[in-house]
Image (cartoon, rainbow, N blue to C red; front, top):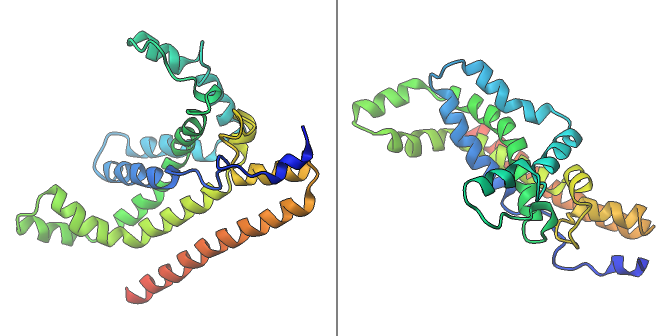
Length: 234
């Protein structure tokens, strides 16, 4: 392959897994609310959701690659068993490859986000909920008028951390798709890796790396500024 092609950056090169951060935060919020209630074996359930975050990303990627196998993968076998005639090609399809990585990444990150949000939930004074119940507030009203406002600094922190993490995706792509099919899963960090070590464009890769640094720095500065603002208000 001609090394000059590295300068042709098509629209398919993703610097961000669109939908990953917001989706993982939304699911983590729901999970944290559920775990904050009285459930059976709460500690074991929390541990079970958090384990994917401390597992090896290489091992997780290999396991999900097997799950995504188009013919003999457990996911497509299940879909076929319930009547889906043409299940997705997942990693072998340019249409589904990025979606497949997003699904796996959300599954891996949601437990970590839920633990942070759960810590924020447990710091909300119970007297606020008691007062709301006396005023006749239902579960939805208490959630949107008490839980969300009180949890907003934690939600902001988790959202920013998730977005920063989405800029740094590499292992999943390198193990599962190598940027393919075509360039459908070529995220920014993997593109830097290919530019430097496959096409030997060290200077070009260094320039992209600085762009990535600036993007991450901006999100980090925003998180630091707003978190300090919230702490002063409180």
